[in-house]
Length: 556
Image (cartoon, rainbow, N blue to C red; front, side, top):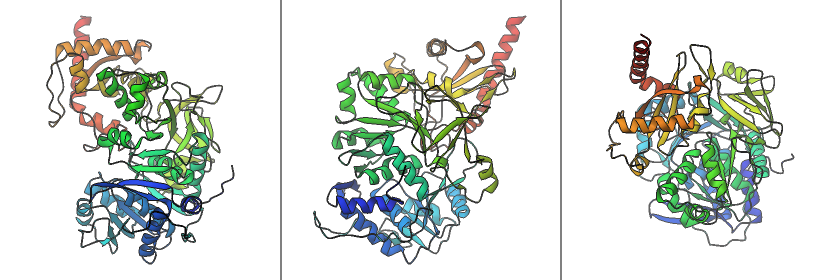
């Protein structure tokens, strides 16, 4: 595939030249609490103003850390850093002070951009940087970036040329610190060539038109939203709405009526449960919930339960699943409209090759694969071998090249009897039951499996269980006998097609979900298995001991 444009800012420049007055971005003005919309010309003007402010302060390949929530200012600053030749290092605002300082130190940042006083307080606790910028006027210690404050007429005809001389195909766009489910975060280095290739391939797979409307609610700090929401929108010229967050998402879907949505399984499961609870389950009900004009829903970041896929398909909403990782900028495979296979994550997108190693690991290569991990040569060599990216995921390809994932190589449970089990398969099936909000299967080096199941409070009441749960308190282990009997029936039903050694012998019922705040979940909703198992080690060990004692007693 040949690429007309070699950098992301060039996408924006093209839209300015061809569609200057078309809507580019809508967002909330936090000061006035009103929504505003910027055309492509206005968007580029705002970017150009920040470039003028930063160009003498940021050198080529300088690392610029940002710690900010999703916003129009985030988008403008991201593009301005690229045009200045800097390397954007976006850090998630929910990280702790200690985590932020560790990553700022590791990146060797020349400058930091923060959104507000809260984030500045975390940075300023120990870090003293010569160059600090802020979106907020209230921080005297930081230089203010007046994003989106340029008054422009509603329609313009004068040309606007962004100075793209410092931004080249080989330039690093970002160092992205993975918030993975295991291990220490590593800085993934991706170039303009990597993300441009992925944006083109993504649009070729899931076509976008200039009149499409997108609501971006996933964290812009992560590669999924950055490429699949923002960069593809810049390429296709469609209208991006910056969401205030998942608590406002349904309201914003009604207001802006998007035609295309990127989301993680959590959101689609939420749609399913929301409609099931109200018994409004027709195709029209689902379309209304999504704003009324939805043409395509894209799902990534984690496996999607088959029941959720079926629910959308039966109601004529195209829900396609894909797969990728930060190291591949991010998309490797995708289903396509009208060509989806239930349970798969689709076929390789254009320019990408997929193969399965002898041990079942998914390998990939293509122009979107990272150049390596920042300051981690040994880890880079382990992950990039003989031209192939070793993903750490397990899977298989069918005769038509559709990829089916079966688990993580590191998450693979090996029982004391030598049986190998992919826990994500079991967890995805368990999540088909609306009563279970989250699930973790445990059993490595044990004789049998148990599960930690987080109970959905709304569904609990709907199914007739009057058990009060205060989610402001720490996690409560639920031991109601009737509830446990009911859960036993559901677990056995859901896993009836699995072998004896893959059955859940017993379970721990929890009232409190795993969250990013307590460190047990990533920002994308993935669960950090090792942290959860460590957190509940006493309960897990006690349950295993009780089962073993009961079995010993029964054998006498």
